[in-house]
Length: 393
Ligand SMILES: C[S@@+](CC[C@H](N)C(=O)[O-])C[C@H]1O[C@@H](n2cnc3c(N)ncnc32)[C@H](O)[C@@H]1O
Image (cartoon, rainbow, N blue to C red; front, side, top):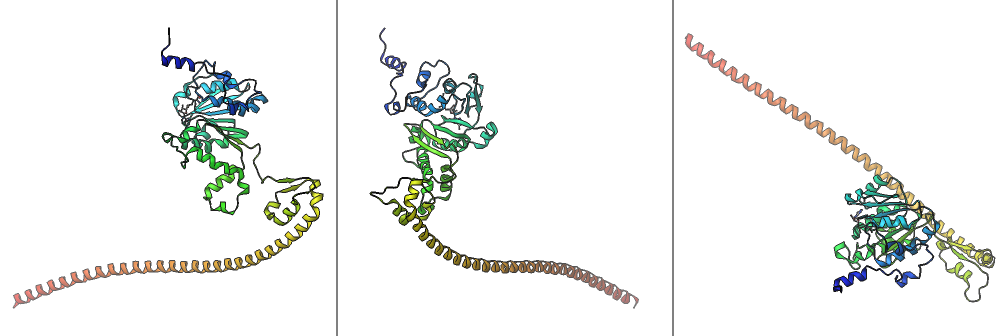
C-alpha cells in the first residue's frame, strides 16, 4: 500500500543516518570506540530527544574521559522521561554514576536502572542543591533543563562550583537564547548567549587595563573569579561547553623567551626600553636568551631601579601627607564625638528639667484646687456664722 505524504516523511525520519554527521564536527570525531549516535539510534528504552549535531559534539568533548576508562560522575539538569540518563549510563565507562535533577516531582518516581539516581529540585537554587548534594562534585554537568535564559544563567552559577577540576559543563539548546518565548532575543541583555559571550572576557582578565575599572564592580569581580577557574568556553551550534581548569589559576601566565640570535627585531631592547614594569614580572627567559639578553637586561634593571626609587620617594612623600590628613581627621572626629556627647548630656538635662517643671505644675494645680476648696468652706462657715448672729439678735 502506498504511503500518504505525511507517512512518507515519518518513514524517512525513522531511519536516522548514522554516517551523516555535520562536517564541522566530523573533523574532531573518530577514535572513540563507541559513538553516541550508534547508541542513540537503536535505543529502545525511555524517550530522549537531541539535535543531530549534539551527538558528534559529545563524542569529541567526552573522548578523553571515555578513553581513560575511569568511572565518571555526570549530573544532568532536566530528566523528563529519563532517556538521556539511560543513554549516558551505556556510553560512559563502567562504574560511572549518573545523576539527574528535575523540578518535576513526577520524575522522582522513574526507575531507570543501576547507577542512575534522580533528584527532585530546582537546579538554579544553590540552597536546594546544597541540601540534595552536600559537597558532591561532578566531572560532567549537562544543562538540558527549561532552556529559559534566566534559568540557564542561574543554573550555571549554582552548578559550576560543583564541577570537578578538569570537568566540562555543557549547555544544550542554546538556540532558545534567541527566542522571546524563552526570555531571550538577538543580542538582548540577559539572554544566555550574551551572558556566555561576556564570560569569555574572564579568560583574559590578567590583561585588562585601567579602562576595565570603569566596568560595573560586581561584573568585574565575577570575571576575575571566573578567570581563575575557566580553561575555555567553546561555542557550537546550540551548545556551549565550559571547561574547568585542572587547578585554579593563582598567577598570570608567563611570557617565555628563548634563543639568542636577533637578526631582525631586538627583543632585548624592546623589553628593556618599552615593556611596562608590571609585564616584566610575567617574563621568563630560557638559559640561552638569558645569556644573550643579560647585559641589556642588567642596564635596563639599573634604569628601572632608578625609576622605581624616584617613584618610591614620591609615594613616601604622599604617605606622609596622607598620614597627616588622617591624624587631622582623627582629631576632628574626636572633637565631633566629644561635642556629640556634650549635646547628649545637655539633652538629658533638659529632659530632666522638663519632667521637674511638669511635676511642680501638677503640685501647684493640686495646691490651687485645695486652696479654692478651703476658701469655699470658709465662706460657707462665715455666712452660717452671720446667719446665727442675726438669729440671736
Ligand atoms: C528537555 S527536558 C529534559 C530531557 C532529558 N534530558 C532527555 O534528553 O531525555 C527538560 C526538563 O527540565 C526540567 N526542568 C525545567 N526547569 C528545571 C530546573 N530549574 N531544575 C531542574 N529541572 C528543570 C523540566 O521539568 C523537564 O523535565
